[in-house]
Image (cartoon, rainbow, N blue to C red):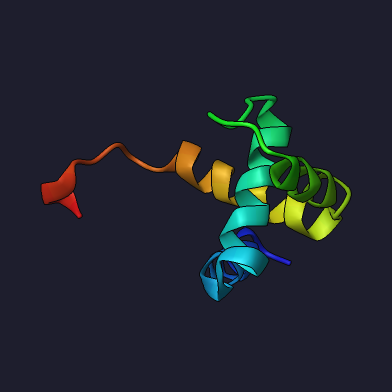
Amino acid sequence: MSFNDALADACCAWQDNRDAGSTPIRAAAHRALGVPHYFTADWLHVVENQAASDARTMKRARVLMQALADSQPTDAAGW
């Protein structure tokens, strides 16, 4: 799968819905970076553990983080 295909997949998954998309991908990104959430909750630990054990979710998080790292900084007017 090309990077663009992987990025399209990650973006589609992110937009799927909160519980199946952005929440687990964010949890996977937090785990990959070793950066804890700004709050703690039992349900969040469950989501993080599930995300960390799901290779597809971890890949999506890594692809999105790589796309952000590779992008040029911009401001609101640049969007």
